[in-house]
Length: 289
Image (cartoon, rainbow, N blue to C red; front, top):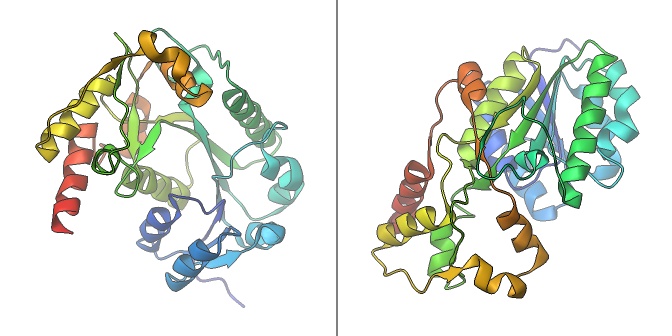
């Protein structure tokens, strides 16, 4: 049978998968992916995505012209590269995209960082991501596959955002002086990955992040203003640090401003350049519903 369209495989159909698959459909490509999640399988199958279980990963690899790995790393690095690296090299895949995290940069005391900044991760998940990145780059060096690593900032979107947390009354509002972080809207992730995987022409590492590093308190204040609600008591980080979970402490102990110039040079301006545009759009969706 003659192949008539490009096939893009997504190894790890997670929280961004619906947005990503809908974006890829605009390119009129065939899409397959891997998950054991029954609900997600049902939703994506209705969109026309061929969904395989985790023990059928090789089937998706064998179909692919481009492949996106969103599956998280483990203590050994990237399980997809470790278990299927030779199969990927032997396949028809010409472009590989790997989703990592800006956590690999570690703490830079609020300084601006870019793709060339020294990496100093200190938490286990960030160390695992860096190990996975190195394995992906090693595979790229031994093959002719164009390989792009996307270091993703904090993801938000219509299903996971500050507005919903405020309305559910599950907000602990914390302030830490001169603490900054970036985020990225799920629609921007989908748009960038769609273009990257379809044209399959880029290599290297790129920060997938918004234009505006901001403090958590600035973002929260904007969210409360949108909802026309009064912001409750703000707790100072140093005063309550001893009461927080380790995962929350890790967030506050990382402080950096992510430069995304390379991203925009490659893929153009973002749909939601900052949290303001993103939250405003989510707010408009909420009030319609």
